[in-house]
Image (cartoon, rainbow, N blue to C red; front, side, top):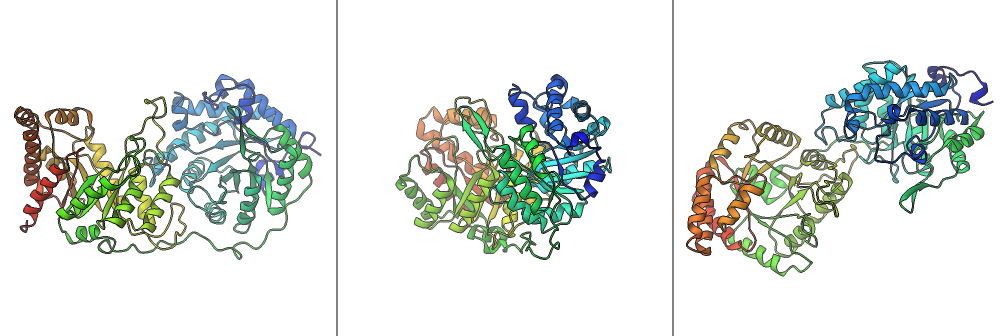
Length: 627
């Protein structure tokens, strides 16, 4: 007996009845196969090409699907905004339900598909939890207006974000909710959450059905499903991809056959799943084979919940005291004045020049070397390995300048765990400027997380856990520094971001080079409640031309008219006179701000280490006298 010749039950009856039921398969890959290019909004097709969407739904129902998902995976205001469709969120979702219901013809239930927003939410991104709920709320409202039977929250890696989607549904409806996470090859989400911990968490919210979708194919999903089944007695669902995609020409092709997928659907049921279907790469042919093979099967008796697995989710550990993490951290904790000098790693791999610079800086008495990371400079050594080599060979402590822009979250965590193992202790976390993308310099690669999110992550590592709340073993011992721009055009935004950084765990703050002490003082007055050490940037100007460039083309740097005039006048007397004037300007700035800061970070312009060392000597003379 198929769905076509049986009277359907309501969705709550399907969930409570105890039988196995078949869901539909992929929408996106089917739309692509119908000639829809990937540069359009697939969710917008509910309005612009409804006949294609309805045809795909009907093909799945004819193949035996008892539950059909709406074409709304990305129909939230955030994703729709990239296509200029944010103001049509409710209309698109409502129309999607109408199309699916018409195709279902009364013989299949219709559930509203809701996927991730596509942005990180707090504490790893700038989107607040309440804001995320509002975005999801407009999508839920549209789905309810269309008359949806229930909801499928799918392909989530971040349980924090999934919870906001769940709350948005529950605030507006008591309809059944399927909650599905996606896992990688290791069986965990990209945040490190295990299937057991995810199942336990989703169970505690009251999700009606718990499961997995997308991921990396049925084999990995089967392992994760078996683990999930040991942690909850809620009904389970499984919708794997049709294997891993293969590159064929300029297309990604999923090669897992309908027969193979059907065999794995049977194994999912044997593992405890009651709802089976497909995700990326699956088609009505896959669903038809699944329906034929699993028809009449019943899920196996589940093991007793919660007795045979150890949760990887752990309580955080105490952080190491700041004064015990590094010499830099000890001075910050003691209130001692600190000084760092900045260097740029070499192009290529030869280290002699960098080591010579570091020896001179060490001999001059600096507390640390700040090692830049330059994603804009092809062929230049990255900051982390350069810092490891400096500490090993020279013996001076480093602060690693670590930008987020050209890295995803997983790579950042891997980098930092390696840095911790190598003995790196001091970090300066920055969002960073976006590098050019190939032959299209105006294309900005997407930002996975910014410096606020990364500060939260490092703060977690310092307490022994990854972003998924899983243990990393012992705690890391990083001293966390962040940047602030005291001359930002949008002062309110900069103030807000600084407060978020400090709240996330920042332990010192570094400014860009200061040339206008009054602007730094005004900024400090507005952040007087933040008890975090401020390390002010200083820079020895070398020419009037450099002064013009910094003022007009480098974000975060402002030079008063008087500074321009002084550099122009000095340069008239020669190059050396200009360099000497640049050092005098920096030292005069320092004298003005010294009582309000706990350290200085001295920039080293290209080929002007001498100027930086002169500033260092002047600073040492001042704070060495007891001030």
